[in-house]
Amino acid sequence: MQKVDKHISELLYEHDCVIVPSFGGFITNYLPAKIHPTQHTFSPPSKSIVFNKNLKNNDGLLANFIAASENTNYNDALKCINHFVHLSFVQLNNGEKVNIDDVGVLYLDIERNIQFEPANTNFLLDAFGMSPFQSPAIKRDTVAKRIEKEIKDRGAIPLEKKRTNVKRYVALAMAAPIVFAMIWIPLKTDLLKNMNYSNINPFTSKEIRTALPNTSVKSSIALPVPNNDTTVAKLAAKIPTPPVSTALVELVKADTTSVINASTVNLKFKFHLVAGCFQIEENALNFLNTLKQQNISASIIGKNNKGLYVVSCADFATRKEALNELENIRKLQPSTWLYRN
Image 1 (tube, rainbow, N blue to C red):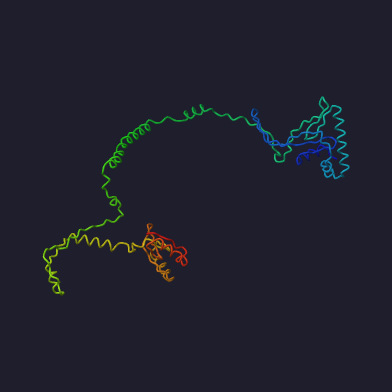
Image 2 (image 1 turned 135 degrees about the horizontal axis):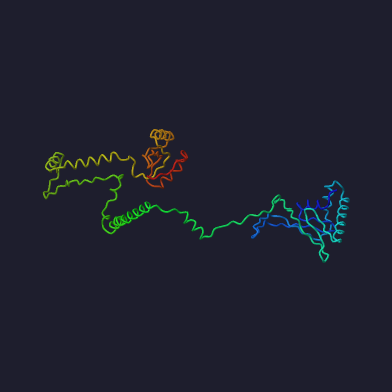
């Protein structure tokens, strides 16, 4: 049969208290990891062991464990424990120390009280195999030494680079007054008040305004009221027709040409129910035929700002009308959305 102290140490790995009947109890307490500030040692978390002589009642833990480990009955296990307790008291009374393997040492002090010195065994299973270690202190430079080191590590700036920086600063100093004058003069004068900003935009179309001559002829002579078409024709022939210059005719023709080439979308319809946008015109036409087969009066209203052909299911002048029809169109084309021209 193994020694009782071996069974005690095995139970301390899984239990916080192991009582030896008629002798005392061994109690474990959790200790977190520690760092010694001067010795620079690191200790893992562990369980500290204390001995309490007042815990003498048999709780059956040690006896049942011995009976199961030694394959014997409970009574024989109690006899083994009692024998261990008797020998321990004999050694203590003789002034000897009782050594419990991996647990600690028991002895009597001057006042005949039992004292306990725990062993270095760590009974915490989570820290099994960890041992204390020592690490040398990290030497850190002071702020003054770090600044001095950075200054030494920096190389000298080449003379050519210094000259380049000087030239750059001189150029910036010369350009600053010019930039300031370009901004200040227009703001403090009337230079920008009469400027037409629409002429700056190259994408806006210029309107050609022509002054038509006044064809009304004022006369103080009272004309007779005509009775038939012949009299009207004779009177019209007598009224002189003002001449129209060739330049005026060319301007009118140019204005007419720009209207013909403009977008065919009716300007009064600003809101459209768009069902799709296509980059290729043929795809837009095919989709247009598909919508017409669904009895939707669709049309291609032109290109958007991304250059895509926009297929509209319906066009409206107000947003309210477009939103009222949007739900009906979405029953046939769920992806239809509202687009403002």
